Amino acid sequence: MNKKEQDNKNLNSQNESDKILNLQSKSDKMEKIVSLAKRRGFVFPSSEIYGGFAGVYDFGPMGVELENNIKNHWWKWMVQKRRDIVGLDSGIFMNPKIWEASGHTKGFSDPMAECKECNTRIRVDKILEEIGIIADEKMSEEEINKLFDENRDKIKCSKCGKKNFSKVQKFNLLVQSNLGDFTEKGDNPAYLRGETCQGIYVNFSNVVDSTHMKLPFGIAQIGKAFRNEISPRQFLFRGREFEQMEMQYFTHPEDEMKEYEKLKEYRWKAVLDLGLREENLRWKKHENLVFYAKDAWDIEYNFPWGFDELEGVHARGNYDLTQHSEGSGKTQDYYDQEKNERFIPHIIESSGGVGRYVFAVLNDAYTEEEVNGEMRVVLKLDKKIAPVKVAVLPLSKKDELSKPALELFEKLNENFICQYDETQSIGKRYRRQDEIGTPYCVTFDFDSLEDNSVTVRDRDTMQQDRIKIDELVGYLKERLS
Image: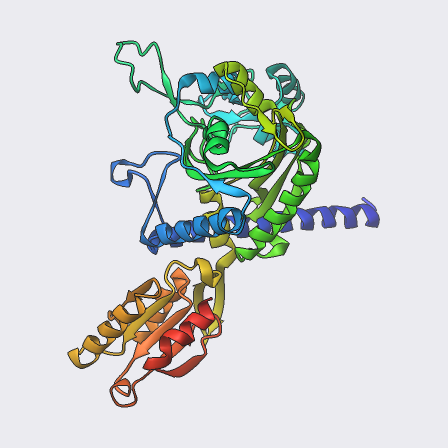
């Protein structure tokens, strides 16, 4: 082997080592976030005392505050700040004919293959993407089988390591129920909704008639959706029960793409306003569009395993309202009085998952830093979405401090989500608040009894200011606004 060949071999070896270290680092961070989420009450595995239930998670005391803040932030951007968008809360159960008309009973599926050695199922489009092959669930079985067959030698079972897989088959993701069907076989199944947007489409005429909204206008909704995922994975990223934040914007056919570009720009600003770092975000264009779509892009976030979909922004044409017009026999059109024109509106949408956003902000905020020779773990969450805004910490449990400290806590709790903590040393209490992302800790000490002041500690800088109690609410409001 000559010197050039040896140098190339050494370089390739170093690159492989760097890749392995990078993967290990990302895996370590994933484990740390999952551990912190449970330890500090953000996210618990569902039904844990019974062994858990794959693809379902429970949000704990901190998690429910965080997800509510994320949803409130989305609602503010999508409804409160927009005079052209209104809200909706449609039912989880709907007439089964809705899912037939939308194509979900036949076309809402994932391409799966099964390991013939250990019966583990894999989602083929995702496995192919991992080895650099462009594929998605919209492909036909024939198309994706062809790609899979061409690359079988590169794919092995994650469980047993073998490469002996079945042919690819499509598995429908709709979750069936026997709601309202009391026959033994359940001959007329209902479905848990697979997405929230269908409730928006079938209420289009109701919203127009009751609000007199003029095109272009949008309908926004936050709600639960359910999918019969074969292999739920990656913590909150892909589950069987999740919450969606969706907005469907109805436009004149000629204005669809103009409004589409405006929505893309608007959603990018909203995501940045959530506090996510721009270097961890990017746009990705869909390579394979469904037949009715004009364009589709995803906002991707750099999760521990790499960039993946956080939110989709899609131009859907008039497919949805057309399908429900045909399925129901009731035309879902719009009459423009000014132009004396009747037409079926075209739709652009933004759709994101609450769980994915929770995961993204936890990942983005998770920080380890050395302070006085010790490692500090802190969630540097944007202050507007932090679960707890202020923690009140009496320096001692003695009644002479705890009683006025509790009174201060009740006063602050009128304005902010607060915690009261008097257990263990002040240093350990600071660390607990750092781990849940509390922006400010207020310490009531013995001097407070004399000078009517408290010490306010900033989470990020750890700087401490002495503030008069009478001025405290204004001081905190200014910094938390």
